[in-house]
Every structure is written in C-alpha cells, then in structure tokens.
Image (cartoon, helix red, strand yellow):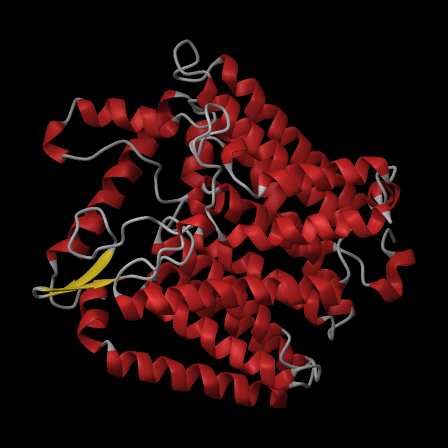
Amino acid sequence: MRLRLLHSLSLITLLLTVTFKAWPGTAIPFSADYVLGFVFVVPLIGALGAWALSGFKGAGQLVADRWRGLWALGVMLFAAWAWLSQRWALLSSTRDALAQNAALTYALVGAFSVLSACCPPPRRALYGVLVAALLVSAVVAIGQSAAQRELGLNLLGEQRSLDPAQSGVSVVQSGEARLLRAYGLLPHPNILGGVLAVGAAWLLAHSAEAHRRWLRLGALALVFWALCLTFSRGAWIALAVSGTFIVAWHARAHTLRALRLPLAALAFVGLAFAAAYQPFLLARANVNGEALEQRSVAERVIYTQIALEAIQSAPLRGVGAGNFAWYAARYLASRPEYNLRGTNVHQVALLIVAELGAVGFGLFAGIVTLPLLRGGWLLWRRRDDWQRLGALAGAVVLALVGFVDHYPVAIPQVMLLWWALLALAMQPHPADYASAGA
C-alpha cells in the first residue's frame, strides 16, 4: 500500500512538470517567486514522505551500486554547496532568500531524483503518465497557436495574457506580421519546446515496442507539431541530435524498420509546418535581418559577457546560488545604454560557474555526465531497453538545450524532469537488477 502511494505521488509530480501552476494569493515563501509556491512541490514532498515511511526502499541497492551511489553523493554535495553559498552570496545581507530558494530547489529536485533512482514507478505507468502530460501540453499549444491568444486555462498554469500585439509576449515577426509562439502551460515557448523535444525523443525511442504502436505514432506527430509551433531553435536542434542517436541505436539493435513510419510522420509534419509558416521560419532564421531576432542574439552576447565577469570576480565560490540575475542587474545599471534588466545568462554551464564557482560546477558536471556514461554502458549491454534509450535521449535533449538556454536549471519543473531522466537512465533493468552493482 505504501509503495503504491509512493509511486502514485511520484507520477503526479512528473505529470505536473508540464505546468507552471502556483498557489494563488499566497505569501512568501509560498508565492510563485519561490519553489514552495508551485503546485508540483506538494506531491513531491508527499512522495519523499512516503519513501521515508517505506524505510527508504531501494536505498540499500543504490548504495551497493558504486556508480549510482557516487552519483547520489554528488547530488547531495551539490545541494549542500548551494546551501553554503548563502554565506558569501552577493546579496547575502539584504536578500538572503535568493540563495535559500535556489538551494532548496536543488535539494528538492535532488531528493526526488535519488528517490527515482531508488524506487521508480512501474515502467508502463511511467510511460503512460509522461505521454498524457505531453499530449495535454501539445493540445494546449496547438490551441493557443490557432487562437493566437491564451485559452483561459490560468487555473492549470497558463499565462494570463498572450496577446501577440503586446510587448513582452514572445512572438515571431515577419515584416509587420506578428505570430504568437506557443506557450502551453509554461512561462515561455522555449521552455515548452524543450519539454516537447524530450517527449518526442521519448516516443521515438519506444518505436520498436508493439504495444499501442498507432497511438504512439499519433502522439508523436501531435507533439512534434506543437514543438514546431514553439519556434524554439534550441529545442529543434537538440531533438535533431538526439533523434540521430536514437536512429543509430535502432540500427544497432536491428529494429530500424520500426522507425520507418515514425520518421515518415516527422518528415510529413515538418514539411507541412515549413509550407504553412515559411515567412516566419525565415524570420526566425534571421534570413531577412529582422530586428527582433538580431536583438535576441545581441542580448545573449551581453549576458554571456556579464557571466564571464562574474566568474572572474569569484572563480571558486561564485556569486551565490540564485544571485546571478542580481549581479547582472547591478552591471546593467551602470550601463543604461543596453536598456536591459537583470536575468540569467542563457547557458547552463556559465550560470552554474557564475553562481557556484568551479567547485559547484565540478559537482554539477558529475551529476549530468555520470548517468549518461553509465546509462550508455548499460544500454550497450542490453540494446533493446527502450525506456533507458528514451531516458538517455531525453536527458541529452535538455543537456544540449543547456548550451543555449538556462531553463534546464532555472525552471524547477524542467530541472526535476531532467534529473529524473538521468536517474532512470542508470536504473538497472528489472531482469538484471541483482547484478547492477557488478
């Protein structure tokens, strides 16, 4: 009974990673500016409590497995280092809640990822919940694009005002025409793009499974169409690279024939999208030198320069967890010609080094790379483990997105999804669980 409750709460937590829903009208620290203000934290904490009541089921096997045990230690040390950064954070004397909130985010996400490594939900249930979450996101995104406005789903986390004529709303502009980029239930189209790219990779990886193949094919086409409507270049590229890996692996597993229909569906959807939105695609590619796209590129360069300066000022310890945006705000206040506000640099590695220094980045790099290497080795030994392939492919998507955006760590829901996939990538297969520590 306790195990069923634990799995149910874990699945609900993963389901809620596709929404930015926060509790309305709550005060600090339960407002939307803090991780405790998000709805997904409630089942997350419940899952951790159920895990404790189960006697931390699976923890013994995790510790016995030197690779997963080392990874779990890295997760705990990373959260501890972020918590310690409160002592030297840039605004430790005036806004100590910044570092506290970031450290708490890392702790909660890290604890859930360790839980996922120790006691993951049944594979079939996990697959079904992730597909359901993706379909909801895709349907909302397609509806927003068709209506060119919000759908009134603010109770589910949708942004309240998505008028493409308004300043601050993310659009693609071609000449005088402004097209709303799909947001889904998340705060920016790029974030939705990353989540949908993970979903497309997950579905493509499972193509060789005979169970509900046509339903999976339809879900893949719908998710990919919604991904296209986000106009997220980083997500598109990340999916292309991850998809290439999936195709190569299916070729090794001699199941390439199973990819014929899914790849044909992706090609058809891609061509249909290109034909329907050609002017906006050209604008997004900056072929015609649209001012909106040029400004976006210029802003990223400026924030990169700020991050490099922050790293030089504190190379070992950083400016403190959650403090980079305020460092950038101070920097920009002395340069009014930029006309920008302080925000995170659009690169995960730079953001981690700037906030937590070389020590924090070393721990973070281990948390990301160890599961990819270990998961790849386990996949090599059992080449038809499609859930592991999907977890690896999804984790690779967000790792690649991290080279051009910050949301894989700046948005708690996406970070939780990413680290849960990393944990699943290392999870021993049910058939050889006993030999996982060998």
